[in-house]
Image (cartoon, rainbow, N blue to C red; front, side, top):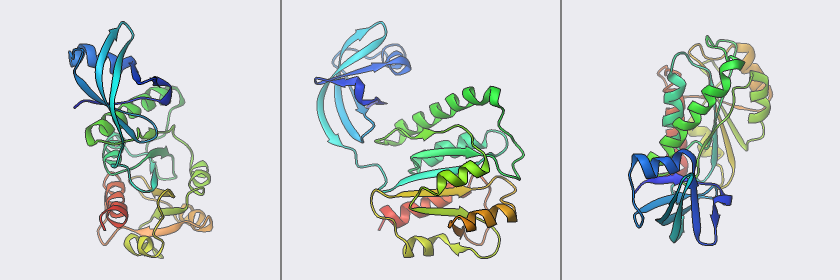
Length: 247
């Protein structure tokens, strides 16, 4: 059944109003007709089974048939901070991270990033990244639409990540703890925030690692093998999922 995301203001008196590209997709691309069913999710992880009721020029109205709490969301809110990689690797990271349970993806610049954000192109890139996240969320049955934020600098990333209950800083140098041990010793409770920080192709500089350590972040390793920047966040998210959801 096709899945769409709406905001709370689009739900009123037993009806859901689907607007924009999603409305166009329902009526033009899928060629659906009145009476057919779709699944709609709001920003609070509620899932509605709806019957298409009315097709208007700028929207599609649907009648709510049933509502239930979506059970596909991880127990903790996970924010992935990903240093900008080369090429289209970030697109892959966004898609797979959403499938693995990330709620927010924040790209950032670090000392060893080869790619730098261009202010004049940032808005278009973010719009594309949001579309990728949305498509992945629909495909994998997420109950909440994950966000992709604008690119930030390293210092701002540190400030944002510090707000989480547990911060995992992936580092290839010495002094790290296995991610499984950290999660076992500091198992986050339902509703808490986890921040996962991954570097670009060159990893992090020693100075950046020292800043993260001074901020109280947990320095974690991801095993004996060196992972590519697009592989590391997926591996780490899988470890978090195994610790929190697959027990």
